[in-house]
Amino acid sequence: MIGVVLIVVDILLRKNSNARYSLPVLAVGMGIYLPPSVNMPIFIGTVLAWWIKSHIAKRSNDNNRKINLKNAERSGTLFAAGLIVGESLIGVILAFIIAGSVTTGGSDSPLALGLENWETTAELIGLALFVSAVVIFAKRVLSSVKG
Image (cartoon, rainbow, N blue to C red; front, side, top):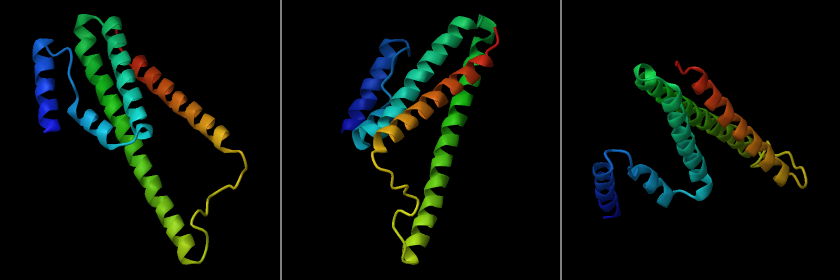
């Protein structure tokens, strides 16, 4: 029932705002199902997509606007798909490593570094890498925009 209500709200939003606003039902469903730590990159990606689209709309003339927006969306989709595939491949590789370690009598975390007080530093490094990836992605997409 929640899905049906969200779809109706999405249709009404699109109709009453001339397709300017919408309620992405899939994103809401993921927000209900997945934890916030998984949803935050989705939210950041949405904000980044909005910012890039608005920036492209300002920088492009009427002739190139649709082409530039389409290219930006294609780049974003390919980038996101690459991240998903890469994460999946790393998950499979790690599963093989852990399974191999456990079946030979080793640890269930064979790649653990065992460093003390490392959690905060690791989180900051991860955040820095994520922000760097966002900035690099935005610059690459915007550099391909034609006036």
